[in-house]
Structure formats: C-alpha cells, structure tokens
Amino acid sequence: MLDQDTRSKIAAGEVVERPASVVKELVENSIDAAATAITIEIENGGMALIRVTDNGEGMEAEDAVLAFERHATSKIARADDLEAIFTLGFRGEALASIAAVSKVRMETVRQGFSEGTFVEIEGGRFISQGVIGRPGGTSVTVSDLFYNTPARLKYIKSPKTEASRIKDTVDRFVLGYPHLSFRYLSAGKQVLYSPGTGHLNEAIAAVYGHETTKKMIAVRYEWEGIKIDGYIGSPDTARANRTFQTFFVNGRYIHSPLLSRALEEAFSTLIMVNRFPMCVIDIALDPHDVDVNVHPAKTEVRFADDRRVAAVFFHAIKRALSGEGISIEQDNGIIEPAREEGQQAEAERNPDRQPVLPWAGNGRSYHQQDFVSIDKVNDDRGVYEPPSMRVIGVLFSTYLLIEKTDQLYIIDQHAAHERILYEQYMNMLQKQHLELQYLVSPLVLDITPQERQLLEDNMELLRSMGFEIEEFDSDTYVLRAVPVLFGQPRADGLLKDIIDGMRLFDAHSPYDYRREEVMMMACRSAVKAHDRLDQSQIIRLAGEILSGNVPPTCPHGRPIVHSVSKYELEKMFKRVQ
Picture 1: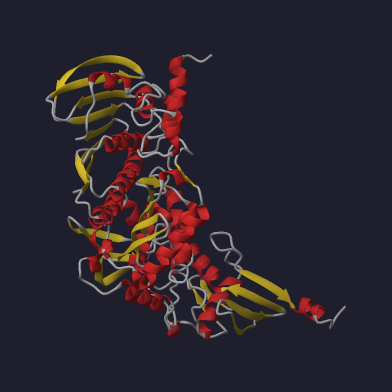
Picture 2: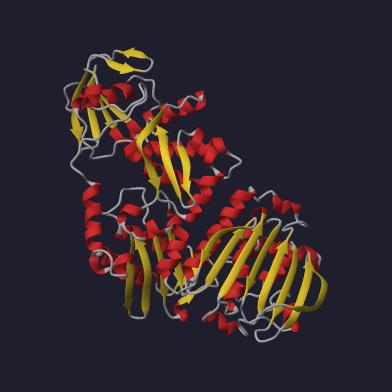
C-alpha cells in the first residue's frame, strides 16, 4: 500500500490544482469564520507566497492543530448534514491538502483575546506550535507551493497567468459578498479593494469599473421560494466570451451551463450571435433543494428541479430587460428606466445603413467610390482581371449569387470577408509590416481594474498587433492608432474583445495567442449577414474569393462558397440525361 505521505499528495492533487485553488479554500474558511475584512497577498503568482488574513472568530490552540487533520471540520457533524449545507466548506480536506504540498504557517487568536497560537506544517509534517500575540482572527501563510511535488509544477503557467487566475477568484468573492471588505495585493501592489458596504453596485464597480457599472440593470424577482437578485449588463455591454457571467447559489459561486443558456436565451433578440451578456446573479433557495456535494471544487451543483429554477431565472431576466428592471444609476435616482436603454440597443443592432468594407492596400478603408468596375478589380498584387462574372443578386440578405462561366456560386458574405481580413492581417504580422491608422481624436478607453492589469502585462504584444495605447492617468488609457484593416469605428469594441481573449492564453505562446485573436478580430470586423452591399462591393468581395488566392473556408473552418454547375442545373430540370 502507498504510505501516508504519498496518499496525502495524491489527494492534495485533487483539491489543490494551482495557486488560485489555495486562495479559494483559504478565503472560504475566512468567510465561514464570520470575517468582515479579508486581505489576500501573493508573490510570484502565488507560487512563492500566499497569505490570507481575516478578522474572523479565530481558533483555540487544540483546534488549530486539529484543523490540519484530513476530514476534520467544524462545519458538519454527521452525514445527514450534507443534505442542507449552509457553509462554503464542509469536507475538512482543504488545509490538510494545502499543507501536504507546501510550507504553511497559521496564526490564530480568538476574538476578545490578545494571545493565541501559531502552527507550522511542512509537506504534511507537523513542525512546531507556540504562543503568539496578534489581533483577533486568523492568518494563513502558504509558501513554496508544490516544492515537494515537482511533477505538479509542469501544469503551472507563468506567474502572470496564475496571478490573473487568482484575481478572477478574488473578483468572484467580492461580487458574491458585497458586505465583506476585500483587499488583494500582488507583489506588494494593491490590485483590488472593495470596502464591503453591502451594496452590490459598489462591489461591481470595484471589479469592473464605474463606467461598466452604470450600464448594469437590476434583477429582483421571487417566485415560490426561489429568489433572483443581482444585475445584468445592458445589451451593449455583451462580451466575446462568458468570463463576465457570474452566478451564485446561496452565496456559493458556481459554473452553470443551465443558467448561462437561460440568460443567453433571454438576450437572444438583443445581441449578436457569439456575443455573451454580462451578469452578477445570486439565486437563493432552500438548501434542501440544491446539492453542492457534487464536485471536489464545489463549483458544480445539482438542483432538485432544474427546469423550475431555469424557468424562474429566465422570467426574471426577461422582466428586467422589458423595463421592469432598473439600472444601477436609476437605483440612485439618476437615469431613465432600463426599457429605453434596451430598446435603443435593439435599434442600434439593426441600423438601416450601408456598411463599409475595409481592405488593406492603400492605408485606408474602401468606400463605394473605391471599388472598381466588373472588368477589373484592383489588388495589392497588381491588377486582377476575372473572367466574365455576373452578379445575380443576394439571397436572404446573406448569400451572394454569382454567375461565372458555367457555374453558379453561392458565397457567404460574412465568411468571405472574414477570411480575406484574416489572411491580409496575418500576412502583415508575418512580414512585420502593419499599416496603422492614427486617430484624429484618440479614444479614451473605459477599462476595468482587471483589464488594466492585462493591458500592462501585454502592452508590447498589443503594440506588435498594431494598437498604440498610452496611459493617460492612473485609471485611464487612450487609444491613438489601430490596424488600418479594422478601422476606427470598430476599434474600441475590438480592443475590448482582445483584452477578454488575453484571459484565456498563457504569455508563453504569443504566436498562438495572436492567431486566435486575429481570428476574432476578423470575425468581429467582417460584414455580417443582413448587411446590405452595393454592386461594386459585391464584385470586389466575390472577385477576391473566386480568384483562387483565398482558402475556401473561413478561419474557423466554415465553408465560404458552394457552386452548382450549369450541367447539374440542367440535369435537375431534366434538360439533359
């Protein structure tokens, strides 16, 4: 049989995957100890040091030692207690698992006393215990994480990436517990502070910034024991991924595809495909109606009645979007009801306009007068003269119908433009020759505190991609130049999406990161289905695709063009055998 040390490390690997896991477990212990102020400090992405300090109840000397024993807990007493969990922790594994793969020092003092105890554990082995004087509460310091399990280190990313994951974890606690004060420091620098006033809008402002917070809409609804409370973003705050969807059940942060689907269905007529609404939502219900003992990370739950919870949640979101919800600022009596904002976003989503197709070549975007006749299509590589090509029309406001020689070509206008933009931009990146468009009026960037950190960490990468950004003051950046392919009207939104994407990629692989981001940029900037193109724009787009110089799929792998021959049509209509 494996010895106890080996068994501890194997079990620890299931609970402590990375520094963010340690932060999560320690902060949950602080919350369960009735703390009102919690400070999180890290060094080197949490690998060198993690310290969580609280003003909670504290522990007696004997409990401080017992807390490091596996399956020792004060939160449940018997198996029946698992049927209704009221605390964040309940398995009694976290401290033992953390101590098995690091060096830990705990200092704890009961509230109302001036002296308490410290305990030191290394690699799961008890080292020392003694008396200490400090304010009431508990401080746990974890250092040299995974020092005795080198195999685990290969799964750890760069310090910046690990620090970003810790920030995400702290953000969720701030949003889930607005009545608690949180302070997060990385390498001695304060990254986030939330005062713990009890107002969710102030917690949202601490995480996402004041400008984003102004666009949030309140959701408050209760039906048959299910209470929905929180905020959703107005349609114009939709993002490129689901990172900004935050769900809690009875105060516990969870991942929930069920709730994400319900949220996105409620927004389905208000935002574009592949855009995702923001939210910070807590669902309160009887603890007997939700099972949190499903996954080791405790981020997955099982509802007794999934359909009922999803239906109530969907109805709550629809009510808020229809005007029965109110914005954060209306909460304070400042602006008009959310109905008008939602209606305006819907109107802006389908404007009666003729889009501009930006193309590389001469350092500017092409308008109608820049497109040439059907006989010749100007191209960077010279003058391209396609064979006879006739535009038949546009089907369903999405598919270009082109006759060329004896073929009928059906071209997806969005996929075609997306591929062209992608190829041109990647070609510029490889040649290290990006054409920039300097903005007459630089754009002031509305960024959240976390986005600021991502900008600082990836500034050189952004500049290599054609974005010139400067710090204006401690809370503001300005965008002065953008890649000419994507143009000023799209610049702010594009940059937001790029920053969102930074959360998903490690800094050690910038080429793969840039490829994914360019795919997103091309998709976002390309003409969409239902955008109306004039004759010259259709010719330009179809001529490029049918030239044979462009791959036949969009960067995501969807086909761009299908063809039907004259013979196939004649056979279909039985003109030939």
